[in-house]
Image (cartoon, rainbow, N blue to C red; front, side):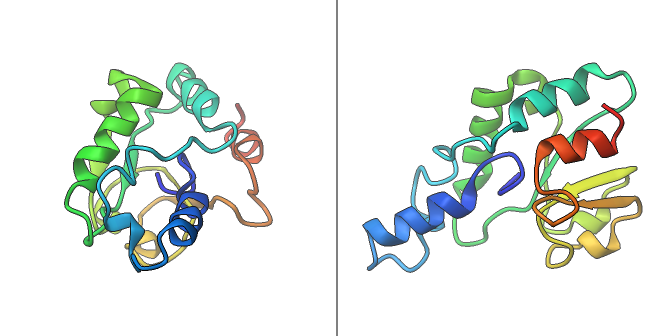
Length: 140
């Protein structure tokens, strides 16, 4: 979710500049709920949902510094993607526990991505810099 569907990095940098005395801005109330969508993410998720080829879910790791992130991530999904994706939201600190064909993630390790049983699309990498490149890989 973070830096794949919503722009975590930009919000984090901005929060650090605004409040340099807060070393972990992601621990503040509202941080996750107020993230902006990544370019192309919302329309890509709609294409995935409507494709009849894929059965998309959102898999996100929680921030252990902010217990509110569980609720805020859920609220973000409803606000930007609708209730159909709320029912497809999985929050787990270990992405390797889940079963699926494809994982689209901005990291290759750190939360079990390297143990995921399917293919990993490394979002933000040179090969997959945008949602357009991801959709092309998925033949959508």
